[in-house]
Amino acid sequence: MNKPRNYIPPLLALGVFALLIAKFPPFQITWHRFFEDPAPLARKVGFLLRVYGVPFCMSFFAIVFMQMQGRLAMVGATASSIFPLALFGSAGMLAAFRTMSSGVGGVPGYAMGFALAYTIMSRVHSIQPTGRLLMGRPMLRIVWRGELEAQRAAAARFQAREARLESEQRRISMSTSNSEKNNALSLRRAEAGM
Image (tube, rainbow, N blue to C red; front, side):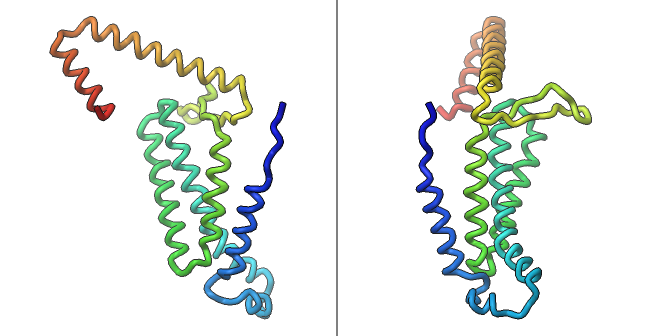
């Protein structure tokens, strides 16, 4: 049975968002003056896209890239695959801050991009390889929260990988001396922060 959706929180958030835009027009001009200006409509729309759209896009992609790097790391992706995502995510966040440095006009766009990215990424269950290659690299697909079969397959792969790693650790622990075991144990404790 599906639970009824509560639309009050998103509508309340959008109302606050609209109030922020109404209260803080871009570059401290009034909305009345903005609409009275004789400039062509295309120029006005371009101005609003630059003021609100650029911080929106920058914060949106920053959050998406940062969330993707965490999910790819869980799948076992290499550092050479994760580092560019971290770099682009950080650069996107810095670019979003840069667009807001001239005034608070871009803050609503930044907040909307941030919120939308987190909302979309909350619906992503995992990222899984498809089994196909593109230029020698495995292709990936996004598994959304509603795809139960793909989630079960991901859980089975994860359990198989954990079992393989556990059996490999057991094999290594049987073939090493006590001092090597103690070194490995202290290293594992240090990695765990104990």
